[in-house]
Length: 339
Image (cartoon, rainbow, N blue to C red; front, side, top):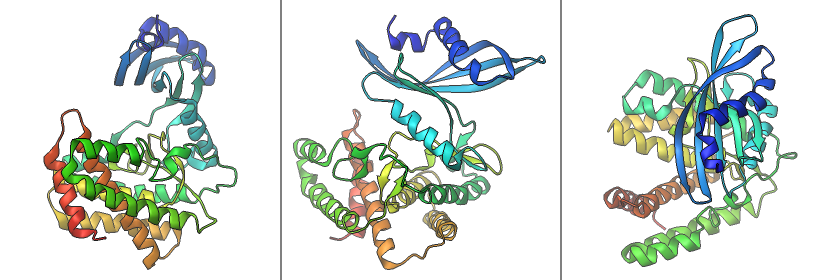
């Protein structure tokens, strides 16, 4: 049985979780059952990339049951141990307590090349945007800002650069060179647009980072789908594959662009999108106790438009290309971000 088959084989995984997870929960006597849900599955031959949840039913020593979601992020070739190290570092840095949280790291499996963690239960911010739940949006957005402020305040003297390739626009997968080559071949009419913007983004970022001794832990994939409302007061942020040392303005610009884009698509109210962007940024600055000077605003804007450009690339490069959505973003960047 291959690893990909093991990960979705109930008999194997029930036995495996009993051996690996049950000892981490001494108040429970046994794992009675699991229900497997596949969130992402790409598997063929010897390759697999999977995200799976196991709704795990524990029996208590004093009687009764409790269901706990256990997740696994596994990849046949990419080192998922890195995700475990990130979660463990952040958990030990204060994200395992309070109302600004993360998934609880459990263990890394060499056998399955996967990180196992206790999931953050709840709905993501995008779900509330989709149904125009304004009360919840306005409850979650400032908490998201406080979460990113908490991350960016974590001391980095003991932190690894958990994903060095992701630390610079120039090298973020799939790499600017490869990306531009694809555009040149498939969408030559847009090649100059993308080339000029990427050259600007890369040179401006390098100029800033090469002239500062500071470095910050950056989530690297800041958007509403990664913000989970766990309760009225508690949120968690998920998906730490891209966490790295970089410019903290990157998380701000990326989140603001995605928040605006999603609000406009689902709520279709630019004034409301602007209100939520202001709520996010004002809360972040207050939590960090920093001022929004011209330099920081310029960096936030740079990452905002870089995220718009990345999103346009994503729409063009999809198997079922969404060129209309890409064209909308390209025209927006041309109009608003003049080189």
